[in-house]
Amino acid sequence: MSTESMVLLDHVLVPVASDEDAHATCAALRPYLDAVERVTALHVIEKRPNAVDKAPVEKRREDAAAFLGIVEATLGDVVGVDTRTAFGTDVVETVFEEAVDADATAVAFRPRGGGRLARLLAGDTATRLVTAPPRPVLALPEAETEVA
Image 1 (tube, rainbow, N blue to C red):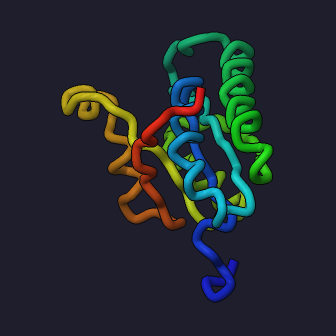
Image 2 (image 1 turned 90 degrees about the vertical axis):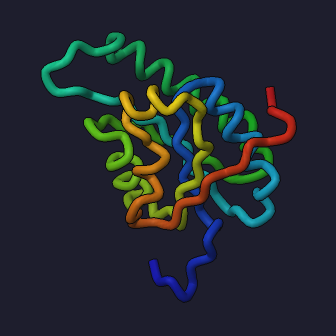
């Protein structure tokens, strides 16, 4: 991908973590869709080495399909939507690996709430996304009205 021909929002990869996040991310991205040719929605199923999974893998795949289906249903009439489910031990690293693999021109995400302690304990994903990324990263503002 050459930077000369790259338009920042041509192909945006958007990570979604839940159904609520998928709705909110779509609502936040919608005002910018005129500049977007394609959206790749991504759900990362986090795998922790030597840890018990939060839920069986099949259930997590079903949940991922539901989250990604929200993006397809919400944005698919306006822009081309691809969906991906990926497994990884590091969510941020996996997001960027998938962005490179999909040839996305940017990663757009909606920062999620949570107090300072929660971010400290869980790892501040938003900070990690914008620190030395291999692709441009856009933090989407909160939408004025959410798409339901």
